[in-house]
Image 1 (cartoon, rainbow, N blue to C red):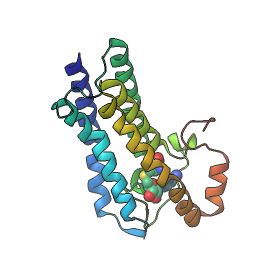
Image 2: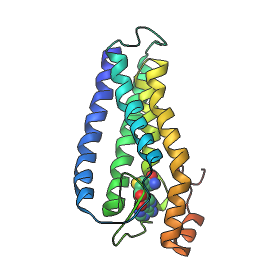
Image 3: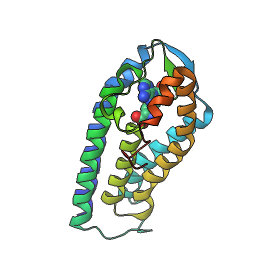
Length: 193
Ligand code: SAH
């Protein structure tokens, strides 16, 4: 069952790469008006690659030996598939809704528009919410406490640092329009948080 879990995790990662690649290519051609990228930002993104991609592979290669392994069950595997499907759906939706306004780090584009429709009508950070779902799916699918939880820990660190800086940048750019948007939305979970 460990192998099945790992294969499902791998398929989820490949689908994510196929979705992200075209946006990365398009973003490279776009002009930036404000660039708030910092060394901390880049370090946290690297940490996410480590937690969400490298750690499960490290576990599968047996580098951790049996350290912190846990048993796998069908229930956890099914939960992993359901959470993984929710992650991919939300990730795709938020990318579509954000369109040309997306950037991997904190940037404001030339002609940047505030998106308040689609999934952004419910929460301000649906893409970060989708990364939390990815981390959760990994925790269900990878039966090792360290490699399984590494993704969630990395996403949490990225979100904790980024969320307030990103909102400050958006407020500076869009002023009262962004304030009004904040009043009618939550950050990650509609109507709750
Ligand atoms: N925090 C959002 C977006 C992540 S991508 C989410 O989780 O879905 C990060 C970039 O998106 C930021 O650099 C910012 O320029 C842009 N951005 C964030 N929210 C936006 C919005 N509502 N409308 C337009 N651009 C937005």
